[in-house]
Length: 165
Image 1 (cartoon, rainbow, N blue to C red):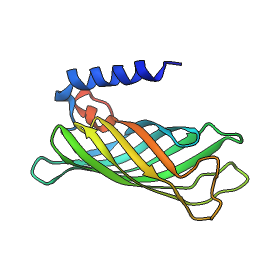
Image 2 (cartoon, rainbow, N blue to C red; image 1 turned 45 degrees about the vertical axis):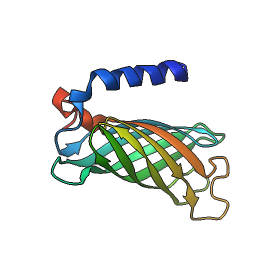
Image 3 (cartoon, rainbow, N blue to C red; image 1 turned 30 degrees about the vertical axis):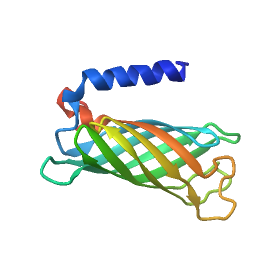
């Protein structure tokens, strides 16, 4: 497994040498997102399909609505299908945010989880968010915790490379 410093450095270098690859198109994407999150446990997030809208003529530079799944390295294994809404305002460095609505389950119990999130995005390619997990049930999934930091790669930014629909 690649260590965090090397992974972060590679992402930063890629973002600096590829600003022309910023999201320039709109439409449906499959897949649309890959991310890692850290709450009490590590999560791996894959966006399965999304609708992305990008415009330079509006204060809201981009938004997307997506369906995905996040899995958590817990005992027992926890999986969370989710619906996400993300947006960004700005130019090269954007202010971003959104909300995730998910249904974590360990296949014996489940609960709804709502995660409002806020952060920054580099040309809509790389998104760094802080989120706060709120559970429908009081105990929720205590092994996940409430605070979440996530790093996402927005694959919708790669339309020019022929990825996606």
